[in-house]
Length: 202
Length: 391
Image (cartoon, rainbow over all chains, first blue to last red; front, side, top):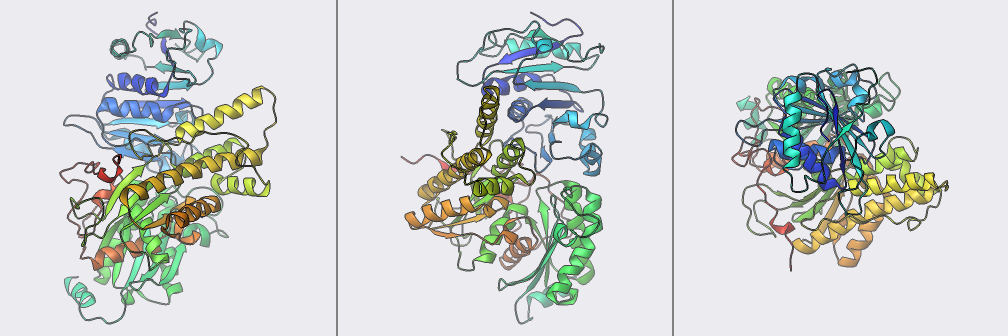
């Protein structure tokens, strides 16, 4: 099922590998200056999603968790490519520390900024962002329209990924969906229409 | 400046005194170390300021806090060493990796001091600092050796070679004495310990809290079975699968209404992290054939890890050394020592070098010819020969 024009895209993945693949597909529709806000509990696959986005952008080298160092800057991996600023708010005690640590500068460097635990920075991050939520348990609201079968038999536990684009980025969602269907296990990753998680918000 | 440098390098008798400065992450630190490996002072802001207004567990992430602390910390380091800036022969500071705002505070201060006092300056890689800590604490430790640098932010297994003499692992392709055999693909070891400690409600910092919970509760390290994650294709570490397994086990046990004995869970998880590190280190020793291992970084303070590596090294006839905790966690004595070694190997940095927030260790070598803009790009050569599987 395709999402409607204002809806979020929901994907059920069966392994870390598939989370990485979804991240790669998402990277295909990222532009200079984009902010990707990544949320999900410990172990939900945030760093795996970051790894996929980095691969998709063509960034080289390992993509590890930036929890302790707060920021891993990855220079563009190819001419004309985008740099990736991979930040993490887990260790911050207050949203203001994002700016105090100088992390807000990365939003204006012409690359892609990815922030793990972005919900801890509500009110500080620009509203104009791509929101990616990783859920280990599919809540009822998120479940509507989601495919039921676990697509991968690796023995890993499934995850539900919800992606929401800001207004005016409908074309990017289409690019993402076509990239997703082009993946080797694209049929398994057929997206559903996910509840957008914010009642009263279009 | 040139005249001062010549004088210091030339005829001055006695050991060289090095002022080291570190501000790459949470700590603002300064130290004075001599070229004959004596620590004259080793000052860390969070320790001296405990009773002052910056105390507590708030990480010193803000550049502003580094800025407030840097001059008092340098003053304290010189005072404790009983020397003045006129006695110093070299200034060394962490150049990367780290937060650019934080790095700039220490780096700019160091360059300013070097310019004003006419002293040579060397920019140091933070992990090269951790490796130097091992040699600072154990003067008998000489290349080639492996160093496991394990902390909240890093899990690196590094082959340290004598860049002049070459070493195991084939000819040295560049002048770098460092070859990273393994690094983490996701979470650092200290990060996995910290996050599971928080999930267990053990408080912060999590690593020491987990060790305490396991020890004081006489936890059984075999009470819970955790995977010992090993990648098929390389020596690299991966702790996120282990972390996820632990979280999901806790979740299932709670759902079934079972009580989890925290000490057992902590002991089992800690043992899984320790085994994973130790297995990789031993495999790295086997593949490279080097006769010595050093352990450094904040996780080196973990007694279970120290004992495990000590025992396995003893059984394998490997020389093992681990610095005292004050040299394992972030400090400036290690930066001074690394800067001193680089300086004595001929390294001089110009005062216009910049902070390098994403500096690959392989590109931070003693002759100063390399840099982040080198031909191999930001991630350096894919020099993993000794990490390749050996039949």
